[in-house]
Image (cartoon, rainbow, N blue to C red; front, side, top):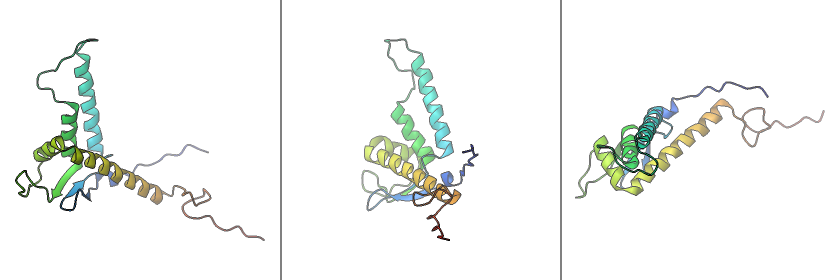
Length: 157
């Protein structure tokens, strides 16, 4: 079997999809494999590693102005994954307009929402990969390996 170049279609990773958080709230999410998010996530991890390297083997500390990994991740999700919402409310039950700052606070303060965003954005990315595989003709389990679809019946001639 020869090594074949696989072209990556990034158009799907740039499409947002509405997901239902609860009966009253919908959230517009980008897929988790969104390139901007992935680049920013890598940059955050490098920054955290650099900050950690400043401390010796049994030393602990915090650099002034440093944020936790969770706080940084909330900021990344609000900036690159969550695009909008409908039906979100503030603590008094009033409609809450979407903004990155508000979303960051919401993610930081609500673990269920944080995990929902990660799970659903990952599911969107997986759905997109599956759809892309179907389009590019990756053999399905019901095929004979020669292309998409069921195998052709053999003639008995």
